[in-house]
Image (cartoon, rainbow, N blue to C red):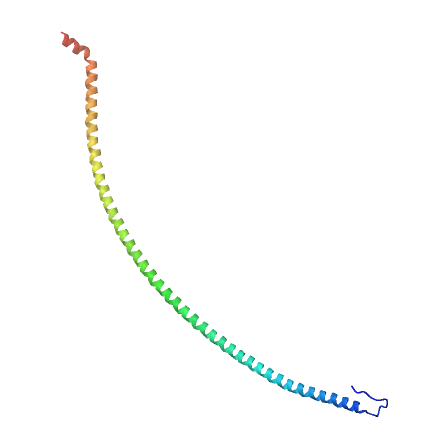
Length: 168
């Protein structure tokens, strides 16, 4: 800010000193700005370098995690395959045991059927002989009853004759 005298072409000492002071301050400010700009540029470069390093580290971490996950998946698949194979083996053994038990049960049932048939045949023969015996008894009883009826009928028919013969 220049303070001028009344004549625009004349400078006073005061005007000259003020002008020099403003110019010096302006030069110092420009130098400070250039230094600050240089420092800021360096800081930006450092931050960009750090960001690049962090990016590279993150990329490497992602690659490592992916690799670990792939290996974990392979391990889990392998474990699952082994578990499935073990289960299949156990199931096959269980099935074989069940088949053996079924064979034993079938054998026992066949033996039971044979025994029941034998018992039934024996019971049938026994029943046949009992039925035959009962028929014979019934036949004898029938003849005895018939004989008794005949004797009673004859007695009734000839009772008068018999009584007259006994009384006389």
